[in-house]
Image (cartoon, rainbow, N blue to C red; front, side):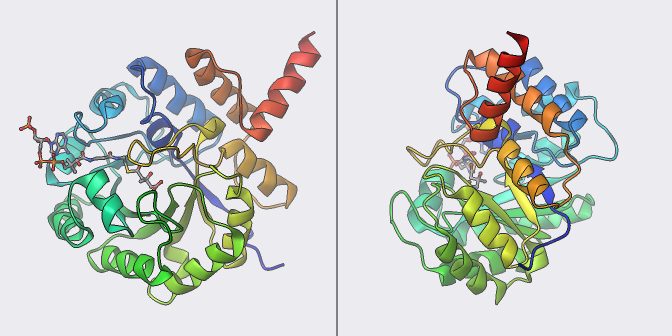
Length: 305
Ligand SMILES: CC(C)(COP(=O)([O-])OP(=O)([O-])OC[C@H]1O[C@@H](n2cnc3c(N)ncnc32)[C@H](O)[C@@H]1OP(=O)([O-])[O-])[C@@H](O)C(=O)NCCC(=O)NCCSC(=O)C[C@@](C)(O)CC(=O)[O-]
């Protein structure tokens, strides 16, 4: 089987994972989570979002998170920005990596960012140009690449068009989001095949939610196509506030366990990663739900009994 020798994991738990939690989470809990994830070996940890607090209240303290964080200079702590206002706030808070987010579905674009797909790209142009002058790299997300909560099926060509637009305005990498986790392996490969005609595979990342339990299978399918950047969320935390019913991203523990089993390097210590997840779950008074995290937790409970 043709698979990458190493995989870069982008941990999105502190942003994508926590953004959907209803109750306020203390800034200190977010900071501890990010620092625990860095200690577990994650080298890229999405730390927050400079979006409208009216739209996503949980991310309103992102500047405080960045200010309170002890940053490891070898690691990256990207944040989401939806517009120039968000980028300026992120730069003032000391962000050195940012991401913009678009969608392959018109309806989702309007629900998530209050504008059409084309308007969102136009809104990002000054963001990219200002980021370039500040020396800050910009990642681009495309949501709903394998289905939309409002429109159903999405044509792979529509995904390719948005991904290409984001590359054309200067994004260095495109993260392909199966926002509602409805993809299956062959659909995933068809979608990636179409996108790869417009954007080279080394510039693509897989960002799959696990709503229907397909994420690992889809990741394997994506890796077979050459994708070697995977977004995931510790303990499978998360969901998008504008995609009702969507559950968390694929759990980072599940991804690391699968990669370890296949001899693919990720540089992450699975035990420390699982412990980082358990600590944040204790704050929510929840037991681990995601596969590997739950299995390791049960094993740890038995060995203490
Ligand atoms: C894009 C907007 C701002 C448009 O929202 P809008 O209401 O059209 O914005 P506006 O420009 O008309 O401004 C309205 C108000 O928002 C304020 N505002 C405007 N911008 C900002 C900002 N950056 N930071 C703070 N405040 C801001 C602005 O100052 C103003 O305040 P007011 O005068 O009413 O007091 C809004 O729709 C928004 O913030 N959306 C974000 C939604 C979001 O964060 N969704 C989750 C992240 S995407 C995701 O999870 C998917 C992903 C990436 O994980 C991949 C996948 O899984 O698919």
